[in-house]
Image (cartoon, rainbow, N blue to C red; front, side, top):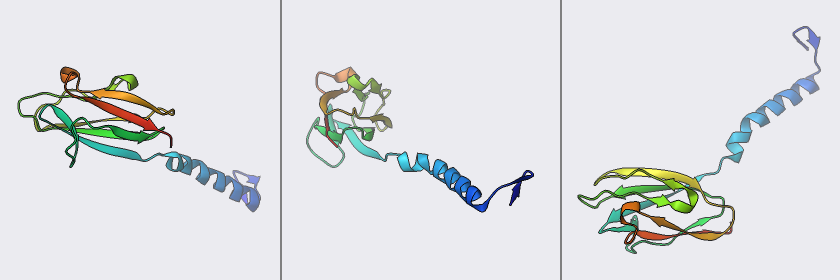
Length: 132
């Protein structure tokens, strides 16, 4: 077979095409799924959507990508969500608004605080990173 005037064997061409396909698949194969946690704010507390425990402990695996979706159901109040140790936060949202923040959990297990920055005395919980 000839490419740009050079003779190329089928074996070399097959290897080249295989390498290009593998290279194209690297992003897809290395992509980590994002776990979604929906937090609802009501009564000056965080709740995991569908649960009744205020300011719950949220457990994630080390290295896991996490998307926290915050939904504000506290009429007349503005809230946010922040994990200061990760330097991750979302902008304050008003009643009936939703926002999200994505982060990757640290590779080492540990316990970290999450807060609503305007109401940190009442609205805070723990994000626990466990071994994968």
